[in-house]
Length: 208
Image 1 (tube, helix red, strand yellow):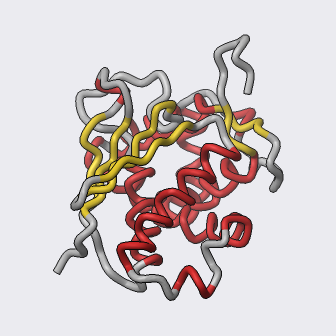
Image 2: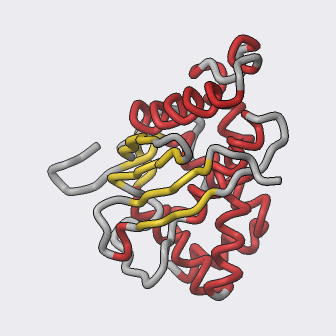
């Protein structure tokens, strides 16, 4: 992190995961178009698979804005959601063992306990390895995932919540944690709209 310049970063491997997931969704041609439009041509390469914090929030935010600008708001948001879902599988391969999320003991816990521990462990991954800051609060019905320093909408100004990639990651994480159940996951506030944090609310009761 470089607070002197006001810049914040993901580790290279998190940036790599996002770019690989984005390629799965829109293809390399799509990524090339986004980088050309955003004048990030010199950054059109995969970061190395290490934990060095060199993937700037600005680069990720610009890519997310590019999805909506190039494909249209509705389609761009859908693509960001699908990218987030794809990110989880790559992330599980890279971070699952480090966080104990793949341990059989965790998999055998009751669902409410897995949701609570899973949210805390997942937040810990971002807080420990990146400059993103996440806080978890909960009620009997809702887990609130609050991103207090968000790379997805970094320095953006929007009329609607913009962190669809994060929603997609959480949707896929919940599907995996619950062994195939779907949950209502909704972003209810966003820094890009002028809110103090990007808040994503997870209803603890599975759909259906």
